[in-house]
Structure formats: C-alpha cells, structure tokens
Image (cartoon, rainbow, N blue to C red; front, side, top):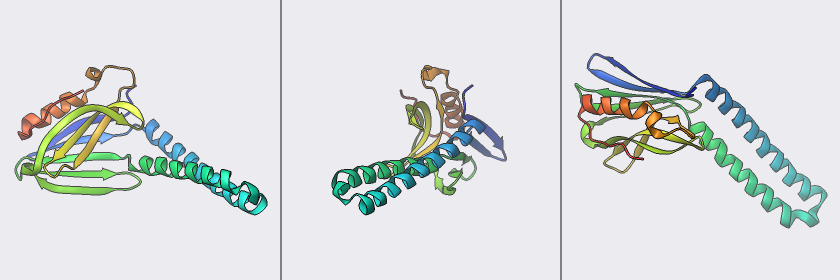
Length: 180
C-alpha cells in the first residue's frame, strides 16, 4: 500500500497533475494534530501551574515547557501545510496553476511557462518520511511541491511520480530532471 496517490487528468488542451493523500494519511494527520494541540495545552497549563504553585522551580521548568510547546507548534503548522494538490498545465495558454486543498487551501498562479525553470522529481522528506517529491522550480527561486509518495525503505525507482512528471514535461515542453 503506497498511501498517497498521484495521477494525470487530461482534457481541453490541459494536463492536470493530481496528488491526493490516502484516507489513512488524512485520518492520521487529524489525530496527530489533535495530539500535538493537546500536548501544547498541557505544556502551557504546566507552565501556569509551576508559576502559581511552585515559583522556586520557574527558572528550570518554564523555559523547558515553553520550548517543548514551541516545537509542538512547529509540528502543528507543518501538519497543516500538507494538503491535496491539483496542478493544471494549460498547454494553449502556456500557464501553470497550482490549487491546494486541505485545512488551509490556496491557489498559486497562473504563471507563464517562461517563469518555470524546472519540473522535476527528487528524493527528500515529506511528513518526516523519505519520499519521492514532485516539484516545480520557478525562476524566482520559489519551489512548489506538487505531491509526494512515501517510499520509506523502498528504492526511489518504485515510485510512479518520476514517470508521471516525465509525461507532463514531454507534453508541456518544460525543462526538468530526475535526481536522487
């Protein structure tokens, strides 16, 4: 079972690269966010408790609790960033539009193919696991993550993402490479 899923949709002079998290990933993300939110609340309540009932321990305990709460907040924010993504390559208008949906949704683009320096894949980390990642690199240096597939211990060659990205590159004429 691979978890996330990426596929291509075609029609009316457009190619859409669609990334969807599996139902299991979505459920686990929700549970993870709730656990992290609970940990943040518990750490902040612990800070208040120490300040009110044991002021002699404020210096060693409160900074530790606040640091842990800050790290948990970073984990919550990174969890909110994971979302499904549909990237539309309009071959007639020669533009790219990226539509991300999830807890926080947003639309990037449309941008001209001329602003894209690479449509590529690479091996990196998504959701704290080794993954094959599809990304769009812009001339401005900005990188749009279009989707990923968790590969954990499997070789990168087991992923379908490089093949799908190569198809989109071929149809759109965009530059790019596959790197590991």
